[in-house]
Image 1 (cartoon, rainbow over the protein chains, first blue to last red):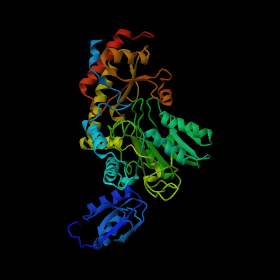
Image 2 (image 1 turned 90 degrees about the vertical axis):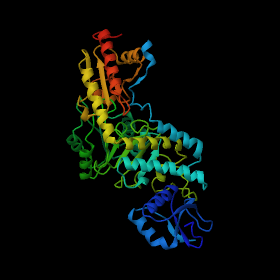
Image 3 (image 1 turned 60 degrees about the vertical axis):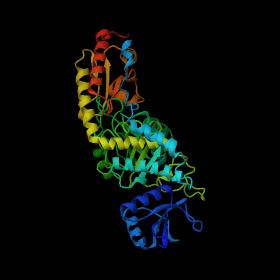
Image 4 (image 1 turned 180 degrees about the vertical axis):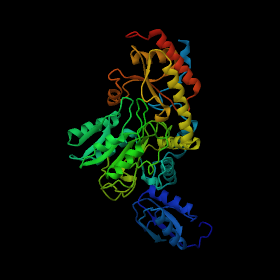
Length: 78
Length: 395
């Protein structure tokens, strides 16, 4: 996603760094581009980290997280 | 005395040594290059440290065939994990079943809980350390909540048929807690196939990690609301709240973890996985056969346990008739450079079961790195000591 600065992003907020790493692993295994980033200032989260994804990937992200039963707090557009 | 220059380390049932070189390398890397507190801060080194810890969860999950690495929680050792479950799960009026081959890491918490009103049944094992699952089933009561078993005796190595006990536990709606201190990494374990609900392990034995590392896999039949944490505190998550998080793994992992140690354990588990648990098992079975056969042909030596390598781990207990095990241990160390463990091995119940209480036994614990030549050396040493001192009351 770094390749295209105009691409709109979203973040998956999670409960802990362990969950962030678990989500990152699951998404990468599903072939979905993602990156761990500190939680944007305007959002609040239980964890200092969240997983940045592309907005257009949100449906596949939801599917991948549900299929592997990875719990998360919510997905927010940024 | 000249023989003592060469060390033959046969105390792997206490802690494995030497470790694969990857273990120290991973710990050095974590200490020198990563450093930060895992998952506590927003910077890249903190994430890197969290990756080290998460990678250890993944390695452990792979080893025990667990789908979700977040079900792996870490602590200082298997004792802490066993305490977590026993004190976290059992309430006055509950009934728990265990065996007469347990280590004090289970017996002492249970005897303490017994004073607090928990009912404890200790199922008798045979003098070879064998546990009959039917005896476990016969002990089930209306208020039984948990069965806790040592997967393999730390004294004689005898394996417990966990899968059979696991199936009966599920039939009766009970949880099965397995103490895998002696088996994790050395014997194939599958949480699902073996019907294990809680698998407690230590990092510094057959996982080849450093001391001060251990953990537990919490199966999905365990009601987390019922399993109270042993300690509460900072987790790096839900920091705005003064209540302990209720999700895995944070619920049971308060305080800064031993990331350097876990980096070493991770490397140890990866080393085990790359060798293959079954290949390690085959190697150890071969060595145990060699050791038992060698010891049994020495006049005056009694070998304990089932005497069948395929039914035990790479731990062998023996005595030289009429010689105090402590004296044998001193001779082995000073004259032959052979490191072993003598006495009761923190398992008085097990020694009562096999008939060696209170003097205990001499114990050889082998590892994946033990060689046939070392076994030959040990057998020769025991033969010489028995030849010189056998039949006498003491040295």
